[in-house]
Length: 297
Image 1 (cartoon, one colour):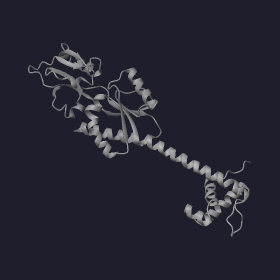
Image 2 (cartoon, one colour):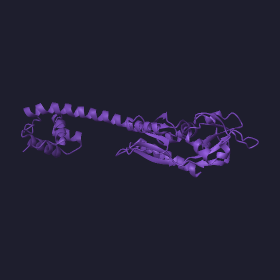
Image 3 (cartoon, rainbow, N blue to C red):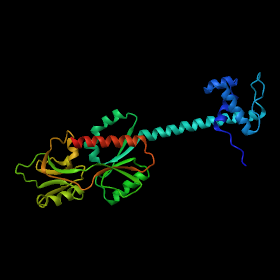
Image 4 (cartoon, rainbow, N blue to C red):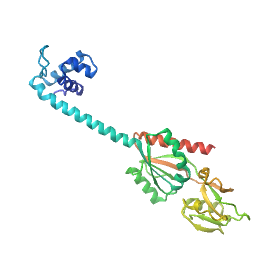
């Protein structure tokens, strides 16, 4: 039958007592009674099968076995403390730094203005940004999954669901796409458009409003740049209505009849874990609440 291993607490008590002037001083350091020190030392001696202290009330002295054990224990406990400190430092870094990947347009026209609010609530969380496609194709969705699985990003915001059971997806909102212009054409003839014809908004819009887009004169532009290119008063673009709260976009003319809700939602996605980092939970809940508030408004 294997010998019972000594308890970690008994070893720690002995290490303190061995370097203290007396059991009384050891008890003061540990915040326990002197009798508790005695019990722990006696239990350790029984488990080891040897005495560690001389049994002489006038002398606080170690036996040869105690002299061999005490310095090794002190070194081991110091190494353990240093290791625990390093682990805490690593944990703090992971909890307070959050890597976000989201569409350029959402970051620029919506999230950037909200960040002071988040920083005021969570000053200990640092945010790092990168950009991804708002409407990812199958290849881009695979990259999003890889980015999350390999922890290149902690959170990705994107349109459409991902087919990966190792990724948790949280629905944010259902985007409504609308037609906007710097100034509506005087004759009401919206023929010139600044859009990316390969992106989902235009594809769905052109199907719904075929009579409008059939004769459209299209200037190709990346989805995130279309609003910047509305210098021609006669040209129109498509945008997510969520973005129109931005002061620079509030002056755009919106064609009320030309709007439609896209079939899928925008999601916030992150790696599936048994326990999510505190910073990730805080940001995802904050983002969801701010978007819901604006949607209601």
